[in-house]
Length: 132
Image (cartoon, rainbow, N blue to C red):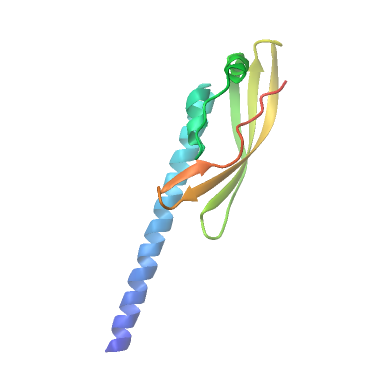
């Protein structure tokens, strides 16, 4: 009889762990989609809030980013660690620079980390460098 309870308890622990992992992946997908949306709409002041240490943009950055319009966002690779606490995503971002009148692309390597205390994903890497 005690073995039965041990097996049931173990099964419950595994089930709860699986549910938490599934929720974490759903949260990741939601976070990445929202980030992509904010970036596509050139909402750079909101994009910086995806960083754990959210910071404001410098005046020069606002002026520079005011000349940028995102034209495409292509996810090329996503690697999730085994513990599901970190994701590396590679994205190609197309952007139009109003100052030069040309379209450019930037390869953006994003590092996302899960904060268990806040139960949220945060961008650890820098924001893309939109340099023509």
